[in-house]
Length: 253
Ligand code: IPE
Ligand code: IPE
Ligand code: MG
Image (cartoon, rainbow, N blue to C red; front, side):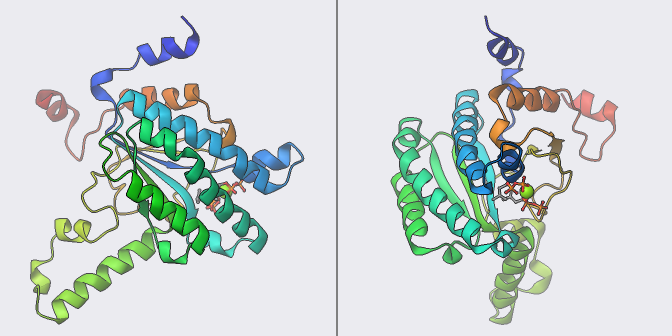
């Protein structure tokens, strides 16, 4: 048995996280280290997306949420932004048959109207073509930022209050969650950031209130199945207390 299979076998299959979120960071540095241009790192990163999607699906993860492009990333040099948009459209089209075979449902989170026409149409097509799929839900965060999303939710609720649909005192955490782009999706159990930075960069700020955070120095294009399993093993060794005592948690189990 190879090392990877051995590691997979050591996972507790009854405690696979329902929702894994990832900040796919380090493409630019990966390319630079190899003497390539930054966009070569993005192109290489697509193969990691392919692998983590496959492995998540195989392991029975229900939701995989990937940070592909942030609101702040619009401030990058225009040629890098253009290449990224091209790659996103190209990759979703190329991956579609395999996503369908694996029963993966595509969902888009973010200010998708800002995505250039060509890539946006391919994304919409993939979302519609996989709408019937009942396996892994792959949430692609594009032109996404948490503050954007929270502001949008506040705006929607304010509009409902202003037109008399709701009263301000009726607003609950649940109602707020239901007005985020992640409405109906359980909060991430595990958030993985590759690339060595230990920050959140405006990602899922509301939703990660009680997520387990895992940071790895491995650059996204190098993030292997084995690295992913390491993160899952680390996750399974943690005690999630949600504000309670360790004794309470153990008695509840
Ligand atoms: C992550 O890699 C991909 C995107 C943000 C689109 P980066 O491009 O941020 O890579 P580094 O952090 O510069 O190495
Ligand atoms: C976060 O990575 C956004 C994505 C991975 C899409 P960045 O590379 O943009 O984050 P910062 O700027 O280093 O915080
Ligand atoms: Mg980065």
